Amino acid sequence: MRVLGIETSCDETGVAIYDSEQGLLAHTLFSQVKMHAEFGGVVPELASRDHIRKLVPLIRHTFDQAGLALGQVGGVAYTSGPGLVGALMVGASLARSLAWTWDVPALGVHHMEGHLLAPMLEPNAPPFPFVALLVSGGHTLLVDVRGVGDYRILGETLDDAAGEAFDKTAKMMGLPYPGGPLLSQLADKGTPGVFEFPRPMVDRPGMDFSFSGLKTAVRNTVAAHAVAEAVPAQVMTDIAAGFQEAVVDTLAIKCRRALKETGHRALVIAGGVSANRRLRERLESMAHDRRCKLYYPRLEFCTDNGAMIAYAGCRRLEAGETSPLALDIRARWSLEDLEVVHD
Ligand code: KG4
Ligand code: ZN
Image 1 (cartoon, protein in one colour):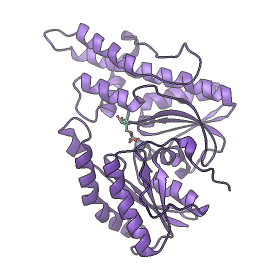
Image 2 (cartoon, protein in one colour):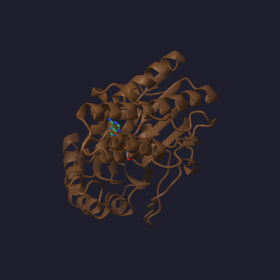
Image 3 (tube, protein in one colour):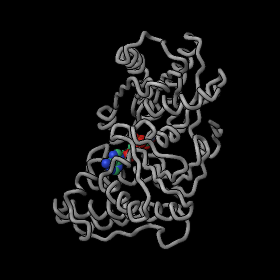
Image 4 (cartoon, helix red, strand yellow):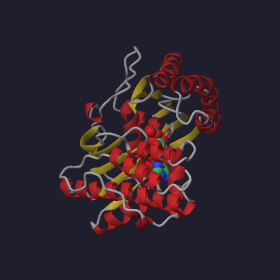
């Protein structure tokens, strides 16, 4: 089956065509980062308007890139949640209209299931069952994955998501939006041991996370080292390195616990923060010590994209799932509420 996938849950317009026999045929992406940078964060109304502007040209371009005539698909998948409601509405309304015009089924896809299944687009796809660490701007989840749709949440964040912690800390340190990747670049130049920040909740049993205390600890350290309201550049890079190390350490400790509890031998990381070089390095060595294997998507599929939605949609549409005609947008939606897809 060949499926058009549309992602518009936040500040990226992603479009892709996935074919269950031939794999990924084409994918295009437009990032709104420059537009939101001026405001220091995503402005939901501007995001929706820009999705309206970009979506149709991107869809045309994706069909061209795949060498297909417009509409040569057997289904249309779109992100129906969680995310910004206005932005989701744009993708959902267009996807449903196209599916109706082309007389093919349409299906709303869970954004985090898209991230979770993104490593399936790679040549060395992870085998079921596995533990998934989903770390994005809005979510931090540890999931026991037994198959498509068969998800048990082992742990989640009680406050900020990992990406949100990166972004808020970066903003506090005076870095421009989007701060996460910039903060991690700065951190790679610093010395991790100079500043020791807390590893939140690691001494408690369980696999939940909390990152807001860490943010406060960084704020206090920045304030304590300011000389005439400016913090010396080397101190900043060392603070960034200390922060990154604390986040990475916390995530690695919880992943190790999850592998131990489930007995699974494969660990998948996905979502924007899985692009973090240090996190990959740490998880790679932890997995190696436990004789487990680490899987992650290529860099461009770590952050939001249409390919992961086309893939997840294809798996579900092939199993006969479709969404009703009424728009099924959800700002909040648990992975555990999804239907299990039986092969
Ligand atoms: O998955 P994603 O593109 O969007 C959401 O669904 O939220 O994730 C975006 C998040 C942002 O918070 C961004 O700062 C973070 O991923 N991020 C990173 C890195 N690259 C992106 N955080 C740390 N290190 C990175 N290299
Ligand atoms: Zn995402």
